[in-house]
Amino acid sequence: KRLRDKVPHYWENSNQYAGAGVKAMFRLLGVVHMNPEISPDKWDHTEEEKYGLGGVRTPELFYEMFGVDVVRKKTEQHLCQFVETGEMHHMFNKFLRPDGMGIDYSKISFRFKDPYKRKGKH
Image (tube, rainbow, N blue to C red; front, side, top):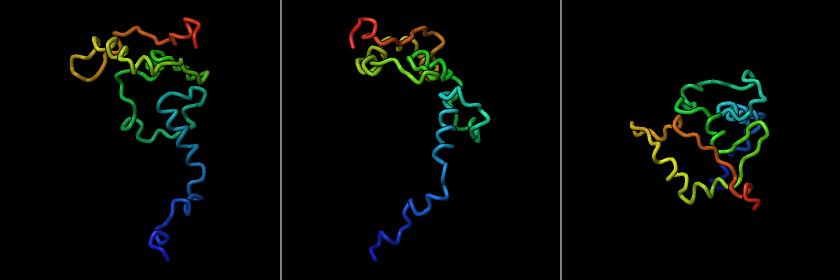
């Protein structure tokens, strides 16, 4: 028998983890606040404080700022262009925190909107 065939394969134990993917997705979406329609008691909060998101900004502020609608499951289009061109960097650079720990989002009122949608282009 080949050496590789002696090593257990991941699918040999897959029945032990039936439903784990769904539970993991509920947990992930819950931690990042992307499933407001799901009651928080429906997902596992184990070590959420330890491995969570921190407190510099809320996920809701991030979603609002960058055009993510977690209720309708829609996003503003063309965000990548805003980032890749350096426009975001230049706009947000002046809001760097004095402690060197990123952007001070409390000073930013910017909300990304698809620039092509406003111009009637797609």
